[in-house]
Amino acid sequence: MSTIDGYCSWVAIHASSRRMVNRLTAVTAQLELLGEEEPPSTIGGSPSLLESLRAEMAASTRGAKVLSDAIALHLPSPSVTNLFAVLRDAIAPRERYLRRRETRIVLAPIPRAIEIAIEPDVVLAAVGAVLDVLLQSALPSETVHIAYERCASSDVLRASLLTRATPPDGGLIESELASLRTWLEARGGSLEVVRAETELSVSLAIPSALVQSDPSA
Image 1: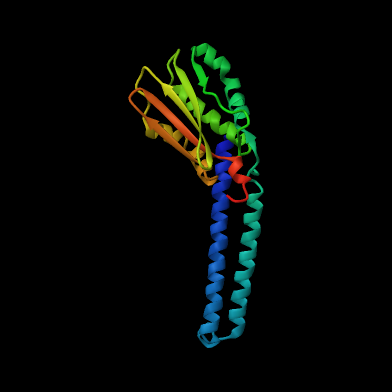
Image 2 (image 1 turned 135 degrees about the vertical axis):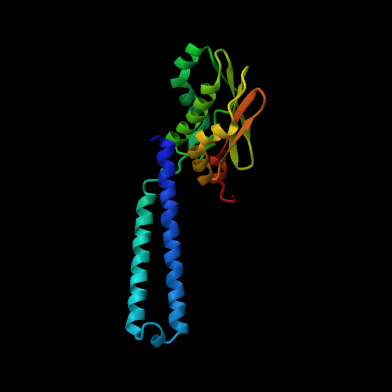
């Protein structure tokens, strides 16, 4: 399982556990209201049964919260990552493949001080996944261009393949990057795949560390 797939699995499990906690909390509140509105004789015939149900629901809610908190420990802790360093580290292990295929990655000027609010290992896997998808579609001697744009709350990377062949179906590419999309959206980012007649591009909107550290944000 890849870093991204593993992360998204824990995100999904954590989201499910949080929904369980919220549901149990809501049912407990409804039980309290029922006890106030209905006499004990209409709820099983005795106050002790109502108290037993209350205690059981409270214990279940506590147990679900403990489980949710334990699952949260498996999620990577948000940290600050240098965007230029991530790109450098993502490209480096693919240089041999690029030379063999006579394929190039052209990196637009990116400020070396740009910081993003994502842990290094996960964002490195994310950028690598995008590069691999594009390089798999590239013919020998073709070029992948990587551009950078600063948006209101995100740093956007756009990787584009200009190809002599017909680009693969955009839906197929989106399915290959489904885990990456889930991860980005969970963090407040986004992923967009655009397919044109001779171009395939993937844009990653990554939360900016500058926004995360701004107390007014």
